[in-house]
Image (tube, rainbow, N blue to C red; front, side, top):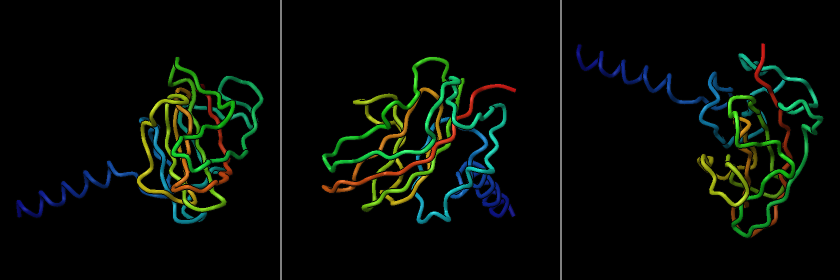
Amino acid sequence: MKLLAGLLGTTLLLAVSVHAAGKWPREFYPPRAYPANSKEDLPSLRSAVVDGYIRTQGYSWWGKPINETGQLRTYGNDKWEQIYGFPSSMNGCHNGVFLMHWRSSGGPVLSAVGYGYGNEPENIASRPASYGYIYGNNCVQPLFKSDGNHINNVAYRVYYYKFGI
């Protein structure tokens, strides 16, 4: 009986602490990057509700107009590439959060979140993939790197949320 109770407790603990693929978390810290097997495995952006944050379509968390879709290129040179003009900062890391879907056109890439260009990424996805999703706060940005020596295009859609009521 004690063994069964211990196993049940461990299973419950693991179920609460592990992020299930295809669902946005209730907490966005620490920022994370996840691979997906297909477009169907991505959590919905349209129905995403982020408690305590407001989304204004087409605007960043700083209230400035921004494109929510775009592309970047990875070069197969083992360098992490960032989204040009991504509105990250080094202050007030709870002022905004983002949710992102991405897809690569030429094969698997690694995704991650990091604190700036040239810095090592913090949370690298568990494996290279052709689809994925990322969430983070306004102090980090999404990063991508080719898996191998090939050039790859990565298309993305990102939703920005600012702290508010």
